[in-house]
Length: 331
Ligand code: XIL
Image 1 (cartoon, rainbow, N blue to C red):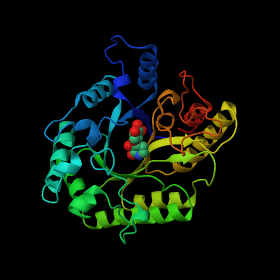
Image 2: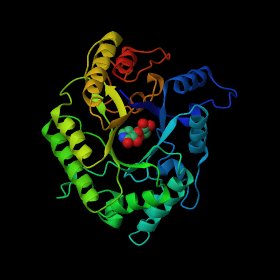
Image 3: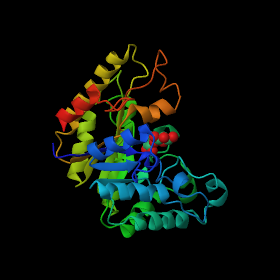
């Protein structure tokens, strides 16, 4: 389908140097090396990971990811430069209305500048739309919005373009895939935001559709396709950035789970990969052994019988699942 395919990774598990790797790290490394054409750090490039203190940076895991990707001729997505979550603990005491804009632009200069020329696309702003905060512009009442105002978004994109003119600058969001009233409304606000940015000449080249989907309930449909086509008219690419399939409401054993998960990958990829501006597809992890859905024990991740989630193309033992074969035929 001409789509760049890959996954989110945990750099610490990449036994790049073939040092004293655990069997898990060996299998993980081999699978990522063999299967992915593009990588993204699951957590290592977020503020909380990169910024242990206000005046220091920890680039070690991110550097390792870039070195690994270069060795295996894989591309890298940057995730992310500006988000309301996973901010460091010091942030709330250090950031003020007076210094927030320079804190943000300096972070972007330093991080996007360090990897400039080596990044396929940057999630410049992540999850900025949140209708529950009831603002007319649909924006989330995030720390960045409270400190800087709505212009933080253009500030971030402008700084990213300056720091890395080669990366495709991306707006990334979730819960914009379904035709439910809530997601239809959110999708509409995302499109309005993108249109506002384009109209003002702000550098933005892509949108990321996270695609954390459910095995049960409503399926993605025509609303998502029209978003993809509307942004194509604006000249923007689309990336499926974080796909996985949650089975927290699906009863049944692992065979039932695997069949339902594979069916979602099949129908979703069949739909979105037919759109010529969909250029990349990444799953949020590669193996069920390390999916966030098995790490975060929330009501929306816990299965009816308490068994493990199986949302990814490889299972806990690194065997390809039906989802793998669904993905392989689709791409
Ligand atoms: C998640 C990671 O997978 C978890 O390990 C972490 O604890 C929380 O964040 N949307 C995003 C990702 O943009 O950064 C999130 O990643 C998943 C939802």
